[in-house]
Image (cartoon, rainbow, N blue to C red; front, top):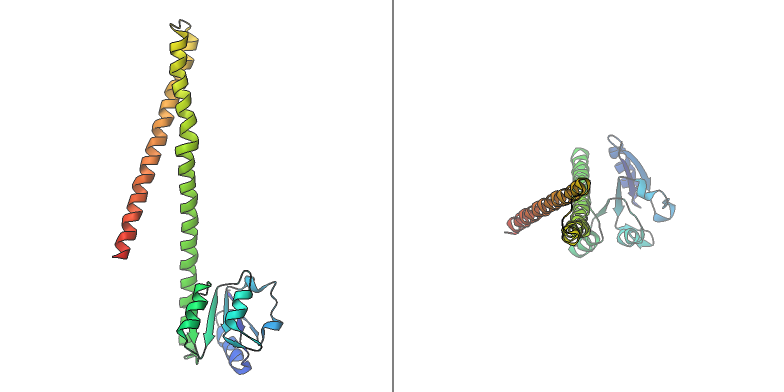
Length: 210
């Protein structure tokens, strides 16, 4: 079951939120930031953070957290400036007080978790893409260069040795040269495929911008 942390100085509201949330989630409520166990804050799946808190603001507290969980700012003030700043620092969403009926509120929370999953998936895809690009760069530069050198050196070796009559030596040289050329063709095919994928992805980005 997903764990949600609520930090709100309004005891009546925070108790109400806990009651509603605990129908589908595990909820923990704090009425001030001083009582929050910062060592476990990142263990929560979602943090509902009130903007107006004793001695500070939810935004300031959020900025002070080293590795906050996915966080939603809650407030009765619909300030575009505050919301934009919160989102720019990695906040997930904003909920306006007063909250709707419990069923609607739970639907909002479910939609937020869907958004969080989508963000995590995008981040995962980006990491995979970065590693794939690094791997292709390694193949293109770090692997192709020495393999090409091996193939070239074999040809030079044939020329330097002149007429080679030893069948075993000829077979070994042919095997090395053949495998080197085969590997070069494989590398070139992989690089060409990567270029096509990159061009295709670039076209998709352009289409999304139109």
